Image (cartoon, rainbow, N blue to C red):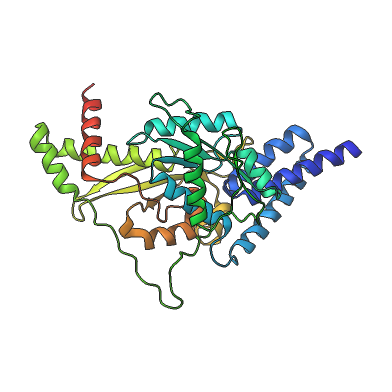
Length: 366
């Protein structure tokens, strides 16, 4: 009996970490805990009791999150990582389950970046667990040589740049100056958002000041150039443009998504849509990507659909649509497993668009 109680206590702690960690959607949290509970307990009643406990945690966490005031420490970490990513240092959160997994993923991300990244910093799943439990957060760091091997001589400079960037975002760090010691953010209240969006710094109280929206690329001009220079039809160029935007979105938002890209000639832009299948219930192994149940859709939408229906949600990825993205995130982000607000596909330049289209045209000819 005592051993059984220990197992249940361990599962409850895993549920708390998964919920508070903030990196898994509600469906992913429940699927993960279900798998652990079925393996450890076996009894349907015991499994359901752990799942009920997890659902209660999710509900309470959601209520608390809606009352968080101002940017949290986790918000500041995300902003600092965004800045580092823009400076040639790959900065990733909750990447891999261990240090070796994290280094594999950030090294590949460094190779894929344009231009190739000069260094990286990250924290992985075990670090998240320790952070949630009040032990602070450990950040790995390193510089890459031309062959994307870690360069110990150049790595301390990356660590100092990471620390300076974190400091600009109000974050205290500790580090002994050696490549063997990771950077440590001292213990803090772990508040990683799952559903809400952080307040933006620099906004006065009352009426919000509109932020400038970057000028959008004129797709028609890029299409004209490709048709003229490559001798293809406009239909072929449009198909290549749609394929390029879709592929870029899959890399940026997750390659498991079921996405469609359609060129809107009237508004001269490519629109993205995500398909989500309605099922009566999830498989025993847990929710599959791109599926939901009427219960998860809620009373407003759930009563209007039935299993077998396919829901189509627009994915707002352009800066001019941030207002729509914010509203979509709030209403349907938990169904799409997505927060799109201020997460534009990068880089989005005429040159990168044209290069992506040419790559798609070459692939179509093979």
